[in-house]
Image (cartoon, rainbow, N blue to C red; front, top):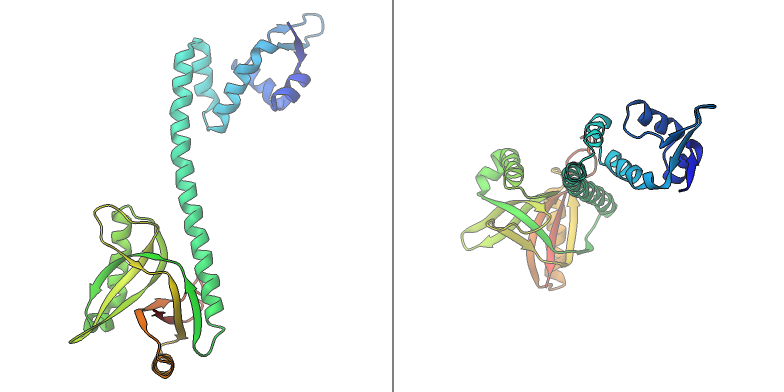
Length: 260
């Protein structure tokens, strides 16, 4: 049997000497042998698996008190059931963290794209990926009067239906025989069974950006370009440009027209 001093055991296990002394104090993990003459503590190699279990448990946020209770019973099955319970909790937390990282990365991407867009004063071309969006149909009169309320309800519905929002918002514009039809949209990560998700196709889009004051001027500029160059067009949408998370910037928008 190989024996290790507390310092050696600390180096081998990755715990600090202070942590090993604390575990001994609470009777979680005690030396296998204490020299009565000098009170030196010694651990043996057979204790290493237990230390690895403790390390795993601590990384999973199992409290030392819970571990003391499990270790005191010396019940292998109960110990592993405790670890499994915390493993499942950790996996749920990992999934949540991955989701939040994805959302924050997308918000950052939206802001960077928005900043790039407003550098253009005229018509410009963007290559856009496919976008899955959750939508709500709205008429022109309602759009003018209370679009903000309907956007808030749309975002609420995204959360209530357990979809993952990606926070690109805007309005899809469809030309109908008796006038335009409008659909408010918010981008979501993926399709959700049982919910109608519209796919904004990937491809090239002709774009202009504007404020509420310059909307007519910029839209005319884009449509003149399309007519002059005889461009075949598909999906038309206006999206909100995300320039400042704290609301310090005024509202700015981007009109996108798909090139077929």
